[in-house]
Image (cartoon, rainbow, N blue to C red; front, side):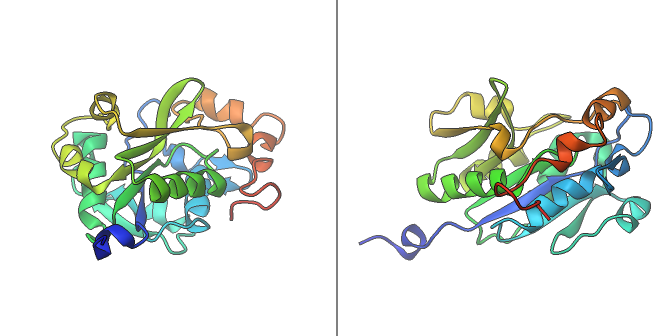
Length: 220
């Protein structure tokens, strides 16, 4: 007979990593306007409307101005005391903040505004159904965040150092589910430079405005 832990539906929380220095952008890129909202707001809205059990957003210590311009909804804020240590430090701060009863965490990047609620819910559903070590997005033939990381992988994440994520850790594992990101699920273009932002804004922001989370409703 399965144990309670094995029979209960897996609970999956979410992490939005938003503590980067944005050196290549030249200013706070996460507040760059996109379809009438700050770039980061698109990610927050998609996560808030999803089936994630809990959502934490990791920011730096001095992000008062950033937070003042965002509608956080049910997303709570976690501070990374030293974001200069790189992405790994933000991932670790977020994992430490999550309810330890969760089975897995879905990791999102704050500079990927094309993420939709539909994609998040698809990844979460695959994570619950398969209980795989990880469920990763595949964008233009390459693995990419967002990705669901089973709790058994968290120690490996907590051992990382520098401006890296889980790519190398996942590369050596077999129990990985891949989800191809089709136009119906959104897009995973990240915004690193003003040129990236300009490409997304072509046509009055229609590339972002037309991406829906459920075939018709905006991911709000």
